[in-house]
Length: 179
Image (cartoon, rainbow, N blue to C red):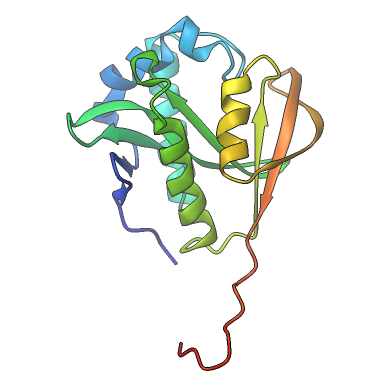
């Protein structure tokens, strides 16, 4: 089932990236501190930010999901990305937020909305996530969402911790409950 955008959470909206998001996205992807645990582990130039947006848009068109722009609803500001992508390990959850937005529970909120979309309308049965071992904050987000560590894998040319979350089993209905 296709998703309807934006995906809403308490404080955020998630939507597919638009080409007009380049400047705001580059403020995130061009920050070395933000990007030290992401991808190859470093800030990207303006062309790299444009390439990421193009790749996310192509992935969305091909698969019906991708990394989406995370918009802080109160300000309307693009503050990062969160979403899903097809990788060798399976459908992977990821999230990246600008530094000013760290420590406020927003990564957990955005990631939770992605998990709901994955196991709801998208009908996925399992998600994975990879975390740089030097990034305990990201591992904490996954733990709050119920992900469990499975093993160490090589991702982006270096070791990462692989976490997985199976689709929850449906709750059994008790006798006398209606649908």
